[in-house]
Amino acid sequence: MDSVKLIGTVYLMLFCCYLSLIDVNQFEPSTFTERISWIWPNNIKVNRDVVFDTSEMIRKAGYPVETHVITTEDGYLLTLHRIPGDNGSLPVLLQPGFLATSAIWIFLGKGKGLAYILADHGYDVWLGNFRGNIYSRAHISLSPSNSTFWDFSLNELGIYDLPTMITYITNMRSQPLHTYIGISMGSTCFYIMATEHPEIAQMVKVMISLAPTVFLNHMTSPIQYLFFLKDYKMIMGFFFHKFLLSNFVRSFLIYGSEQNILKDIYVNLFSILFGYDHEQFDYHLLPLILSHFPAGGSFNIGVHYIQLFQSGKFRQYDYGRAKNILIYNSIEPPEYNLTNITIPIALFYGPGDLLDNTMHIRRLYHLLPNVVDIYQVPWRNFNHVDFVVAKDAPKLVYERVLKIMRMENSNNITSIIKDECYALNLYNNGYD
Ligand SMILES: *[C@@H]1O[C@H](CO)[C@@H](O)[C@H](O)[C@H]1NC(C)=O
Ligand SMILES: *[C@@H]1O[C@H](CO)[C@@H](O)[C@H](O)[C@H]1NC(C)=O
Ligand SMILES: *[C@@H]1O[C@H](CO)[C@@H](O)[C@H](O)[C@H]1NC(C)=O
Ligand SMILES: *[C@@H]1O[C@H](CO)[C@@H](O)[C@H](O)[C@H]1NC(C)=O
Image 1: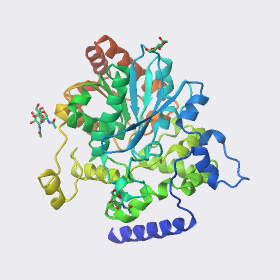
Image 2 (image 1 turned 180 degrees about the horizontal axis):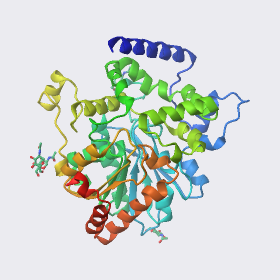
Image 3 (image 1 turned 120 degrees about the vertical axis):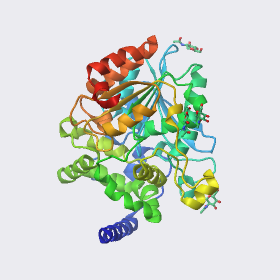
Image 4 (image 1 turned 135 degrees about the horizontal axis):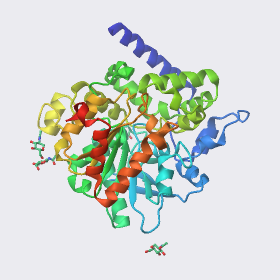
């Protein structure tokens, strides 16, 4: 096994060196179009649709759109996209997963993407972007080329980014956030926020967790075989913070998404890592998806996730014994206390998700004191990314989301949903 790791690492180093010779240019704030066209030879036809950014795509779909830039307590500038509702509308905040952006909520297009569906139902829709992704890669004093900029884990997203976004929205609208919806990392950070800043969690009326990644120790995805890479901080830092975001990689991904061979390789890679569900996957979305994913994040978040996987505990970043004692005053990092989260929470998961499964969800359900819904998406192969890319996501997932949001309105969410869970036989199947 060690020799495999060594060969893998050497290979990765050579690969990175090779690519760095071609072009790994620093990311400057500019439009997507400029960034892409920089590398595109004029004679290659680009599907213009795929190079729009989130707000351009929303405008093109015929919706009003606003962009709000807000500053966190520790100086990061975050972008919120908004499809504004009218004065009486209820605000809802959607948060993306690791390496993703606000664009994931509109991948499926008009009438199908969750952001559009919520806007059609009269909600005031806010789409967040965590620090480090292309829309939130700025700081009042640090440059993204300084490695200090990237020195954050899941913890910072939970204790700085989410409180800043939620207070900004609730202050502007002078009312609580009606619903928070987070997919994958978007829900992980909510749990961190809710345990560390319960006063902010009180501003949220209900939280919907899509494919929550809190407990990971039973994951079956082969992504775990890459976890040894956490020991190669220098290379991986370069890979995450510079290389993955370079125009070269982006262009290569988009270009490949329209070539048959590469297209299959990408889709197979996705299937291997997140779950196999070809029936729900629309190949036409591939160029769009790859022009917005991966979109940046810190390597430390990856390391934090690996620690959650290895320890089986939902706890703060592990800096190693010596530094833990300095920072936490204990050898082991402190756990996030999920039993402290009192707001109503709905848990959604896909049976075909290789990162999440019933064991993780059951454990989460037993720790959270106010779970109002556990929903196993009724599609056998529904995987981690299907929540935002599946053809039938509106029918399989978003209808249920809307139902919970409407019930929250009339304050009788718990009883009705629980009845339905009994009907689905979920509670009887080992949840209680
Ligand atoms: C919404 O409120 C603003 C400010 O209170 C007001 O100027 C505007 O006319 C209102 N719009 C509608 C549609 O009621
Ligand atoms: C990175 O930022 C830190 C903190 O502001 C500063 O001390 C350091 O000199 C910077 N490093 C570089 C290479 O600019
Ligand atoms: C977590 O919080 C609950 C109630 O708020 C408390 O009873 C429990 O002791 C706490 N657990 C830890 C590990 O701190
Ligand atoms: C969790 O709740 C307990 C009891 O209410 C409290 O003592 C503890 O400080 C809380 N923990 C956090 C992290 O807020």
